[in-house]
Length: 302
Image (tube, rainbow, N blue to C red; front, top):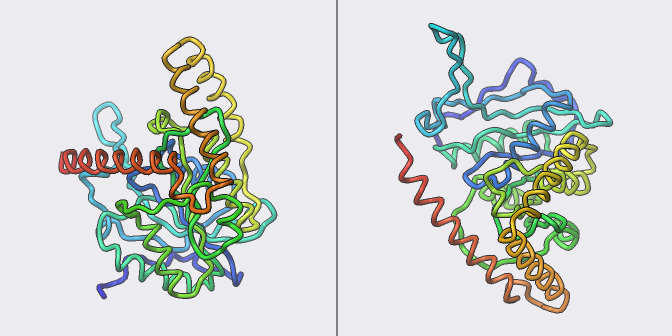
């Protein structure tokens, strides 16, 4: 393989052994900005230090993820580069864990996967949990739901409401799941299903639900207070908009009926993937992925 894509920092002295690894990468379908909200909530409210930093020049397409430049009257004062880092974080009780967060690399995925496995071995990781959010036709008036993958059956039984059989463009986190499974690690993937009509907004309720799942899966005590407050305010404003718009009311009501019918059906279906509403969800998700993939190709290089 090529040269490694990361460099350990001067703070790379993780002393704990057998700690969880949480992977939160902002990919092409971060519906509701759920991964970004989770990352900000953890890094802003918990003590953390960067222990490894990945090389932008090897992994980043600068024209698709341009740095933020700050212009001060008549000159460029500073700029901020996108980052992909591995952090040691301490939860609300002081328990350490590792957080791989930032952008999903544009290049050299196979080398990145090898490097993440090397880092996991170096820091003696006990398990890996990754989180992602996709837009799906679910109503904001119902509790957030998810798809769970991996090799921990209790997590699948507890949190997975849909078990599709389909082929979709993959994310780096999903590829990491396969690599970690083959390496013998305990792995759980969390795909949150965010309301498709809110996918372009920051949607805190789904981020809170994701953090709750991560807490129950890993045993970590993670902060949610800020996101809960933001979510209450968001839902209040959204409810006002829906009440003022008859078309939105009809849309939400139809989504509620289909959602409730599907959740009722899965208690009687042996194969969740064969439930009619599950097929509808899969078709709409595949349509979104195809559209997004085409839009991304059209915009690349601008």
